[in-house]
Amino acid sequence: MTAITEGNLRISVPSDVTARKFDIGDTHGLTHCMKAVDLILEFKDHFLFIEIKDPEHPQANAMDRDTFIKKFQTGKIDEDLKYKYRDSFLYEWACGKIEKPIYYYVLIAIDGLTEADLQAKADDLKRKVPQCGPSSGIWKHWIVEDVMVFNLSTWNKHLKDFPIRRSIP
Image (cartoon, rainbow, N blue to C red; front, side, top):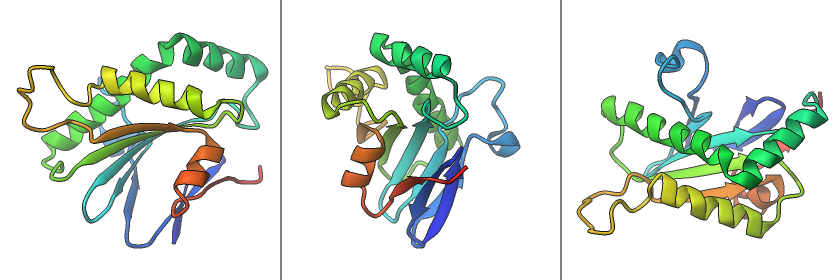
């Protein structure tokens, strides 16, 4: 088991999964024109793109948290989340790395979000990414198999093999 840190959150990743930070420094190389998810995990049969938003980070101030919650409630955060996925997908596709299904998981580390809030946000993102393509059915491949949105509690409840914990500051 290895651990990857994002801010003060640590995600434990089984040793048979390849994990890489995708949005740091020159690793991505196109940050001037493309957004990037935080992490990409590669499994034997699929990829997992992970975006982490942590407005409850111990160093975040109340205004940052309140601003984020407003962006979440009004859907303004959706644009950022949509482009983080799409640009990351396009980047990996252009590198010839997209050969298996991709799942997009967003962790929003706000304890007060309900499962209904998280499911509604996932449904919004599925439409905006878009998951299935046009209603004509012309797409032969989906650009994302599924989109899920979690808080820390729901992540750890549903993804027991990849627990996330806060590090002690």
